[in-house]
Length: 208
Ligand SMILES: Cc1cc2nc3c(=O)[nH]c(=O)nc-3n(C[C@H](O)[C@H](O)[C@H](O)COP(=O)(O)O)c2cc1C
Image 1 (cartoon, rainbow, N blue to C red):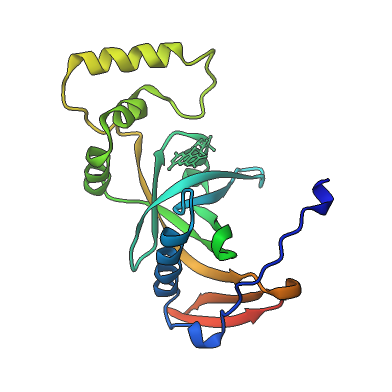
Image 2 (tube, rainbow, N blue to C red):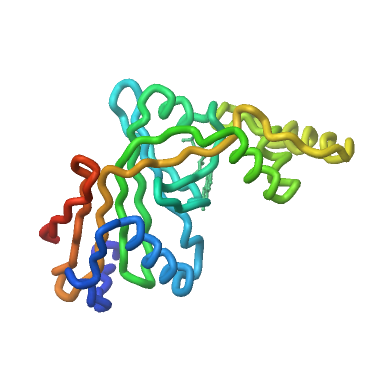
């Protein structure tokens, strides 16, 4: 029975003493722990965008870089999310690290990263992934995958260096709010929210 599924969170141990001034630093610490402890895709995050009618859409993307400025991921600029972010650059992203009993929620706005940095990441990808980015008009309706597979084979047979398509690249999320959640006993979880105010991070604890 779904209603009987119940996890007891026991890790705890997240207190005000663990807080540092800059939440990106704390995120790096938590991410390091996630890399060491999570079995699957510790860099997977759900990314929420909003369309022009105000409907949110959520999907998983992979975090590829953390910097002082924010969080970078890569996608097709003409995909559904790409179009939504073009019209409204406000987004939210959530990480869930079950082994650590942790969640991190980010709110902010996105900007495309430079073409040079997208080129550089694109060229570091396996060749088959590079080719897939070329043949797939992400989010467009298709009959089936066979034309895409055939196109990919033709490109591979040409045996030429692959250039990043212009419609594919990175976005950086500049955070304005980051919340850290640590599971606690009896559902009394610990939540600390950082909010950017006049270029300073203000911290509040929130009720679970
Ligand atoms: C584990 C996982 C990782 C994914 N990583 C990415 C990614 O980094 N970039 C991306 O564009 N889509 C990624 N996807 C696919 C997206 O969830 C989504 O299907 C796709 O981007 C199309 O979304 P859209 O139609 O809302 O634009 C991933 C899916 C999963 C399950």
